[in-house]
Structure formats: structure tokens, C-alpha cells
Amino acid sequence: MSPAEERLQKVLARAGISSRRAAEKLIAEEKVLVNGHAVALGTKIVVGVDRVTLDGRVLELSPPELETYALNKPRLILTTLSDPQGRPTVSSFVSDLTTRVFPVGRLDFDAEGLLLLTNDGDLAYRLTHPKFGVTRSYLATVGGAVDEATVERLRAGVELTDGVARPIRVEVRRRTTDATDLEIVVNEGRNHLIKRLCEAVGHEVIRLCRLEYGGIRLGGLAAGKRRQLTADEVRRLREATEVPPTPTPTG
Image 1 (cartoon, one colour):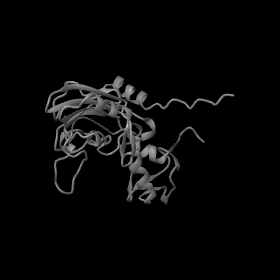
Image 2 (cartoon, rainbow, N blue to C red):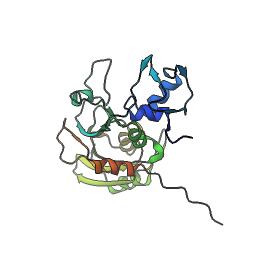
Image 3 (cartoon, rainbow, N blue to C red):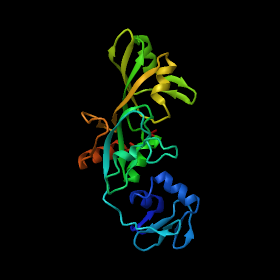
């Protein structure tokens, strides 16, 4: 393979056309053509040589400057760039950017806290794919006083409808007779995972805030505000997606 060749879906994602998963769907649906022809997933192209079109429009694939932002998403905002029902989305917090960025993963409509947005499709793919096991930290305020036995149940793992979920860490941050603040760290992104974990041990989540994702922390960022990540922070995110090599069997 020539060093100049790259997989088509990776090129599309890197250029900010879509996420890598969305690019694979576009290719499978034959909406993306290379030199006038539909191609299979995994096809390699040479940027600047091969002609790539999307729905008949020629794509400019010289990669843009890659940008990644941290946003403190307020409650009652959809983690999407558009909504057919007209509900508020995170697009309103990035509409002034000249670069088109998209959300990395999900954050529930009624949840708040750290949301990453980027035009780096490869980074987004790595941060959200289960095989990379990137950590997410949440502060969950639940109803009632959570006793130590229940905390231990959470730490040991809870059977959910889609399999056992085992947090990386569970700590009590505040406990009253009416409510408990739990910091819960997980390394997977199943739908409503924190809420389901807490409900499975008898405590409903009243408020949910994501504090950290892949080593990037929310810090003092105000609700509805964003900041661009530094080169060092982006490097740390990439390091968080490095999968250690599988040990070679011995003996």
C-alpha cells in the first residue's frame, strides 16, 4: 500500500464531513462515490488525486484545522446539532464558530456538565468506541441516604437488562437524610447508565452532572460556556484512547 493511501471513512471523518461511524453509513448507502463509482467499506483513497463526491457534490478533502472544545452543557438541552421537534440543542452554543464541530457521545437531555465537541472524527470515534474504554466521571445526586452496603453493591457491579455494569470507582461526596451525592466513574457509554445503576440499587437520580471525560475535567467552566482545548489536552485525550497491546501467551 502506498503511504499516501488512507481509508475513505477516516479521511471523511478527519475532514469534519461526519463522524467515522456516520461516514461508514454514507459509504454503505452509496451516497459517497470515488471517481464516480460506489465503493466498499475499507476502500483506500489518495487525497488530492481521487475525486470524492457526497450526494453529487465534490468534497474538498484537504483537512481543516482540527478543533476540540469543552462545553458545560446546561440541563434540558439536546446533545445534537438539530432537532425536528424544535427543541433546544447544543448547536446554539457553537453557532458562532466557523468550524463545524459535532458532539462526542451522549449526555442526557436532563443531565448537565462536560460535553466535548470536535471536528476530529477519528478522535471522536476513539473516545466513544467501547473497545477503548475511555473513563467518564459523574456526580449523581440521588434520593435518600445511600448506606455503605449499597455503595459496595455498586462497586461490585450491578446486573442490568443489557448485562452487568461495574463502575471503576464509586465514592460518597455528601450524604443527608434526604439525598446523597455520589461520584461514579465508568469506562463505557451505555444509554442512561448512571441512572440505571442507581435505580437498580433503589435510588432515583435527581440531578446528574458529568465532571470528567478522558482526563479532561469540567473545572470551573460556567453553564453554557465553552473553551477550546489546548494541544496538551488533546494529546491527553489521544493517550486515553491508546489500547494496551495484548500480552503474548508464554509457555
